[in-house]
Image (cartoon, rainbow, N blue to C red; front, side, top):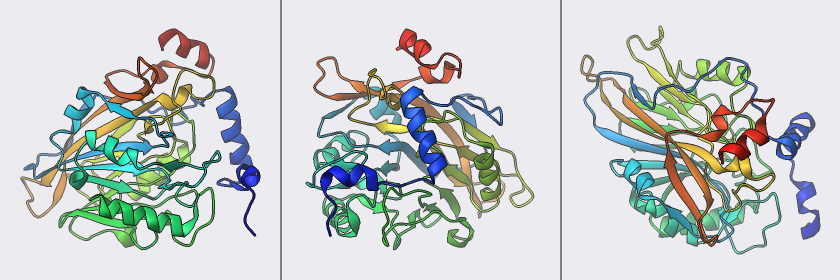
Length: 349
């Protein structure tokens, strides 16, 4: 029996009850700025390892539903990704003409034209491992993947494709910790070790963590530390807010090699992001660019050379007819505290 449209919001169950209440509370009163491990935002240019650069990789966060609004990408954002050989994004929801009932996420074909302002289709890689890929069922997901392929986009992140090799020496690994709806086609998040490509640079691109939290929980920081025994970098998404990046010192398993964690890139774009109540935290995200290649002292071993990141802001254009994506060195959200979230934001927005 098909679920009536008016019942769909009540049949979406991505989280256990306690977490569901937390997400609802943070949407109502504002994000959490608890920082249990004391992470701080560091320099926007990071030097990790002495390599011979072979590839430049770019990463963006959640491509949320635009509600068919145009996305206008500023020249500075385009310039940030211009040198990238591959740009990896988290594509939240399928392209479908089915009705959209919150909290379902969907796209219209317009988004495929708009994201090509970041990079042409042949340089874009869309991850489908997120909590909205089950919203419209497996058939809709398969139809969306067929359209993406037809339009020249690479994609991965369902059960049959939890990995994607950007290069014989660079592997992406993904999976989702959450899903609003059940689906046999979903790529669930697992420990990355079994998916690692031996001898290659492995980058985990997980959909993990908790919505509207400005810093990762201690359990997530611990999990990241464990994962870095197997992978060279973690670039994550799902929180809808940018979270700090961290350079991790060499470990016994990777002597002499520094690694990188971006706990969450937040949102790249969202059609409802604005200063209005409930939607103001969704305006900010971050973007990341890194060079990768063989270590000069150990050419058979690939590593990250440098990493650069910036904040991005998505909000209404001057005429209100589109959403504008712009690049920033600072983010109003990072200066907020649990004691003054909304008023401090209003003063800076």
